[in-house]
Length: 586
Image (cartoon, rainbow, N blue to C red; front, top):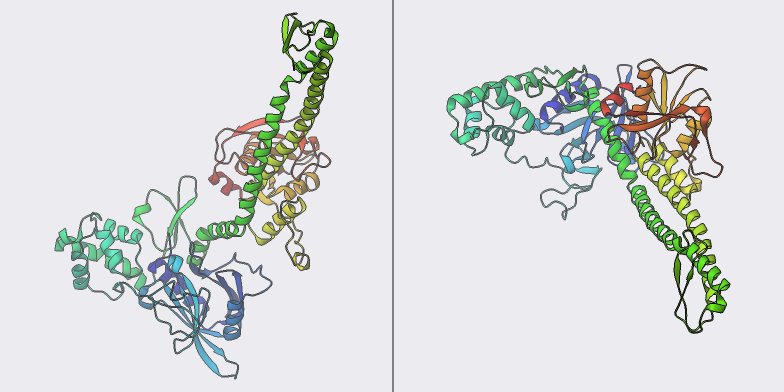
């Protein structure tokens, strides 16, 4: 669900309580469209996240957002110039729209105090963050909207700022019963659509909830609805909005049977009575819990799209090479027959008539001894034909050896590239991306970019995914091939349990065990489920997972990162689920 006016009102109430009169200490631009403000108020430091990401636009207090950027972009520099040290005076939601206007008093270059407005518009792909002067002149925005992109409103420095057109929607906080009945009853649309198309800040979800509370069929047409029905609808509408006016919020997260989030809201919804409900004391924590992982994955996917495209190209190229080598091996299948032709022609050359196109004799080199017809070049003698067949045999033999070697190499390349594609789904941070790029650079799949050597090297840390089994055992999962090598060959002890999907690309999984400790069945199944989830079998059922103690896992000299051999293993079959994985996360 996108943030609607009610959820946004809940967020503003929380921000107003905690941030008003606070000082802005630091300003970061942590992503292309994300701004992070560090605000200090009443001895406590808060982090306020504003993001104009078209897929996950929002603002809220954050506990998870970090600043990985070393060089601030121009928009961030501009915000620092105008807002650093500024005091937050007021936070408002104009006309209950999905717009937040933060009033900030800061000192200008001459030492005078000025009021400026930091505005975020939460409107899908039209979302934006802007800094506005008190006279409504735009200083700058995180997205520039030119006349060729929007004929309605330009968003550029030195232009006058005005709110986006609201499509003649009314403010639900200031409406009355007569106005409500007139607007809803005049529309030839289903009642739930009449509600959210008539009033700003209301989403289809809350419109359906209002209909449900009024015990009215939301699919009824507005123009066909009686005044009694519209009156019941207004009572439910007013009851819902009264909670907003009183700042009576109850942030709720709704979970499915696998305990995965499906939606959230700032109050209880009868629509979701069949789902598990989790209540939060902070709406910021609720919104961050629901959105952070999704937005993180989206940002990582954007930053690694070039890698994914390149790896797919290498996979396609390797598959074509594999077909070529397989065809070469198929063509070499007759090499032994060429040798037999040569041997028979040499042995019976005196019996071969000159200028013959074929020679029939008994094949004494293969049981049962049957007649064999040998094709001949009538321009060559029997011995010359024999030599020709010996050359074909020798060439086919060399080709077969080379093709077999090439085929093994290509299959190893494909297996490695598939493991890289899998690891793209496990990346979480800029450090993860940098580590994968470094791996591909070392393996020769990426070219070194200019100036790369001047950048700070990738920070070494303990980067593995960490889980806790129900029994208390620590379980670690590698996120890329370098991490798989590090996890298995250096981090794991010889007595630890090692798991991996059978005959497929996947992460290495380690269960930390004491010496001579027998693993219980529940922990084994949980670890195997992680190995299946972080593998090519993620969406499959009854995935085969091999497991053995780490001392039975060996690294072949010269093998690609993440490639190992193992012995004395057993196999368990599991069906991975995201809910199960979430339960094991630390």
